[in-house]
Image (cartoon, rainbow, N blue to C red; front, side, top):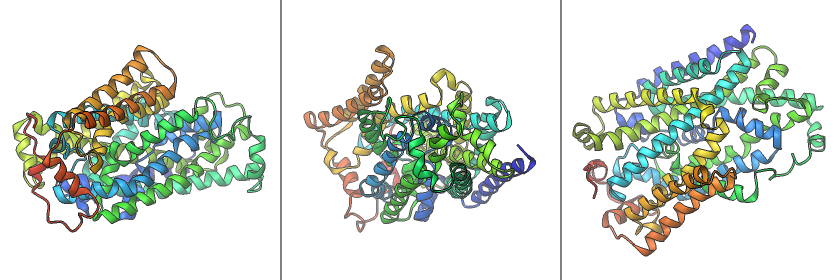
Length: 514
């Protein structure tokens, strides 16, 4: 890269750190750190939700699919995000906001201790935290691939560089730093992506070249579903993403909790859904067109980076690399904040009596804030170590699609359906059975049977968990006045209800279960 490119990349990192330092002044307690104190504007929450939903894997793993199969990657990977987030704008986003308002929760899992019981909360917390370590590790590995192509730095150095910068700004600034850097990254990434679109269209012969592009692509690249990406795979993926992007991915639930009202949370989700329709199409056009412009790329996962290096002038190459960094850093920092919330508010209080007393008090203790920051550091450090060994876990796409998508259902189904009135009689037995049997289904299909069918790997744990949760609720209903009260408090029509009980009434676990 030229010195202008290094300057652009260095300037990007400096801006991210400055935002983190500025955000630090807005953090006075745990509520500010994890939910922005409920003061985040809906448009900022929506952009942050969108940016936190995907990473540099778009420019590595998904770009490779676009190069090898065509537009199917947009159909199966991103339209489900728009559909799931749009549905959640009406069904889930306002409920997450009411949950924070009425019960002063700072973690998406805090309410589970009373909605079900403490063992259920702990099962989902521990397994979800472990899953996110691998998920974020895949993102570090993705951006390291790009950095290696652009600069020649080794994968390990790339992982450490990105991780350390992210660690610095998100540890000091909490959710405010995440959201503000997400917005800044969205602007930077937008400029870079539009520059790539401009040079690609120029090489295709202008805007009119789009009309002839589809006839010049390899056979099948214009089909919505092709290769391993079948209608069955798409159906399973849609359902997974409905759960994942409405709270199963804990950091996205935090964005809804951070707004000042249920209506603002709904608008936030609507904006994010709209962006999922438009923006991935802009990002993926270059690798979709790459078989025409670069027909003999040996490693498809490098195609976006190679196009940027060959086509863009000095300065824009560095800006494009910064734009690629932006997605990974947005998702990883928000995941780190969410995991820290879960560990600080849900896991540690069950393990030690000292921290149990901290979480039962108003969220102003400096000890709790220090614990949150330490947990953030530990999570990012562990995820970087796993990223260094990413190839042993099936590579970037193997982690994202095979592991994360498959395991997300068992973790998120009890958490999300537990907010809905139709499932208020599904209790701890249904939740734990759904979680355990769903994960067992994944292990059997993936490791015992050894299936390589992505549809089977994703659908089996999802369907198992869904059927078990609903079936157990019907066959063994568990009426619970506390669960009924929580469901009623977060449902539409409750906005004018009386103030919520103190946080400790819902969130302080006893450590022994109900």
